[in-house]
Length: 136
Image (cartoon, rainbow, N blue to C red):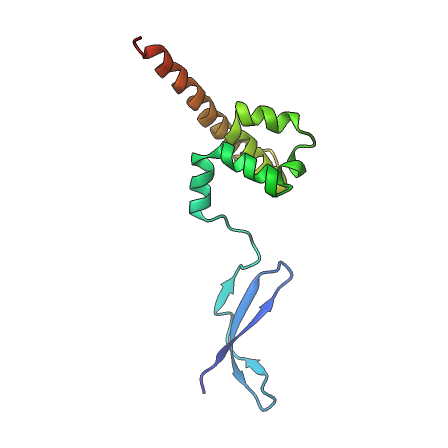
């Protein structure tokens, strides 16, 4: 009779699936080392959601403000997210993500914020360049 997977959770809430053989009680006797380690407890953001956030950050800010408390956990008021909505929407979302996922504001996370500021500033500067280059 083929073995079937027995899944347990360790202290870090990582699911470990073991291949076991049933004994006389119907319980699995684990005879093999872990075959599959599944990390189902972590929150993974799908690529499509990430692309939508990059393409429409203002829409995502409005949806997060209306349907969740995500921005309220990161910003304790209305003025900073409102300013971020108009001037730096992607940076506002990146900072809210860092605060809500308990990431420190150092190292790679600062680089992520700088890239978000550059993307936001590039959008503002690019629109000004195209506005000035039009011939009326």
